[in-house]
Length: 332
Image (tube, rainbow, N blue to C red; front, side, top):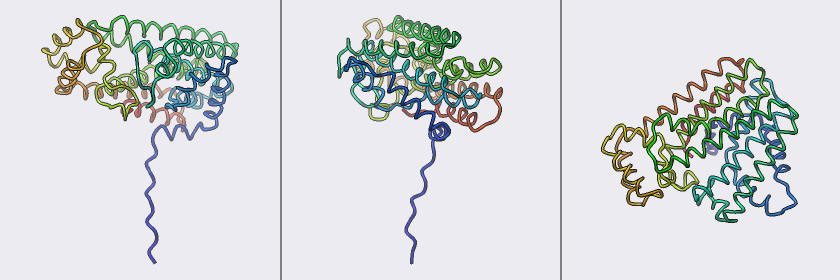
């Protein structure tokens, strides 16, 4: 008698391997998030949970928990830092979708479309306030001070990006923006908010920053290549908003005739019209800019991994290495 066909096991992703190592800690983070989103004003948890419960990758909490395990810094404060990292991220998403008039987030209508701009902004403020309240409960002045500096740097990055929308930008300016809007929170999470030992604090911070660069550059490539079905976001949204990211910078370097087209489009917008967006997308695709951007993301991932040499070998360190590689190759 023939045995029934067996379905081959699906390959385990780097994210899944990391999650398996800290499953119980992640469950504690989810419970902490639930408590932090509670409010006597019933609409606030509804708005915040509209985004939090949409899933997301929980990348920042996972980064925090794996770094805590790799650096032997686990404990209640590490759980708090992990939850706060996700809350800060949620606050920025709520605000960003209002600023950028985003329509989709994580594959569903954005909170601003569901509840209105005003409530979405205030819910973001609520998430930020609860995050600060939670981090203050650690009673660790260093952890509190470093989060304050991180949030300040994030605000500067977002403001710099908005202020430069519709203006020409160089690589230095681009890195200033992504360091603030993305990499600085990754760095804070990777250093477990400052709970790692002094010997490991620098390497983990540097790991997180390089990881953030890899993640953001890969995200900027996706803005040119992904559809709403695969990314859960409006495609080419940054381009429509007049934001100059690495793929466009590299495309203009490769195709000097593209730069005047971009300048003329920015002079008329943002937002950029659909016809000019399609024209620019085609010109970018005709260069090596997207592949070159992906290679740069890979280099940042490799730089991140090199910083982990300071940590002792462990399953958690191996998972951090996997996480860096996956960040540069993300498809959504």
